[in-house]
Image (cartoon, rainbow, N blue to C red; front, side, top):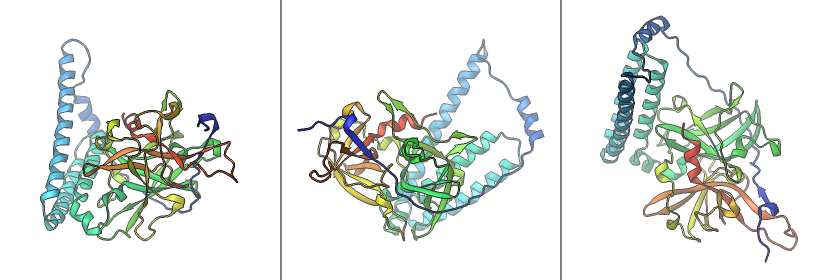
Length: 376
């Protein structure tokens, strides 16, 4: 019986071609630089020397305290949305938007740093998404929240459409990322060099046909905007790009996985465990509601071990081009766990195309790689 080795394995991972165009604009504003500069000059400065070390420690403790407060507030908002009736949830969203706009107006007329403004907008966007993630709204749409964690990723070079693949949302410490396969963003071996991507975001829980397209540049000032990483075996075929949450529609029905969803105990996933892959095989999806499809499969190698020394495990789900970057999930104990990121189909180079069937196996990178891709 032949043994699979890296040298005699072919990776079938070509994204499926697609085409679309879209333009976005951003609103810019002028700041009162002189007033801000005067205030900045009067601020205390911390130096790591002598008695100022205490000030630095106090500032650090204060920052940690504020971060803890933010996490507690997020938990409170999530709990509120689970117990409030639908009518109260809608009222809360409206009142929150009004108060956020008042606060925004105040901040724009006082001398305050751009960093503070940016942090405010990030927190407002995150809180707005927490409110919009209400179970009642999702149930009213008839849509499983898992389907809203995934987006179709269209790649472009200038205005020319290139390929289509799959990506999913991942949120950590209030920052939102789109995760996909690295070869979706950059694949020199295949001559694939897109400069931007587009994804679709749902904007109405009651009508999933309503979407807004978000264009994301892959380069900023000539530097790759996505994050990639290596492991002991080389380049990892997973990448993450941070999404500017100020560009996300306020009523977006986006759902995101978090570090808490990553399966941390390999013993929970024995060989043969059932799993699902959520994506857009060959670009196929619900074109009316802009939703992906799910394929079922099983864990086909020892979960927790690096297959052939690579940072992935195997699955036997039936996959096609366009599925690259899809989340690999397992439902257990009433909830979903993120096992990995689908990358490619595996095959034997020595297989006879006329006599042997394909292996029907795929590589899925372990989801714990996201910790390295989404940290500062």
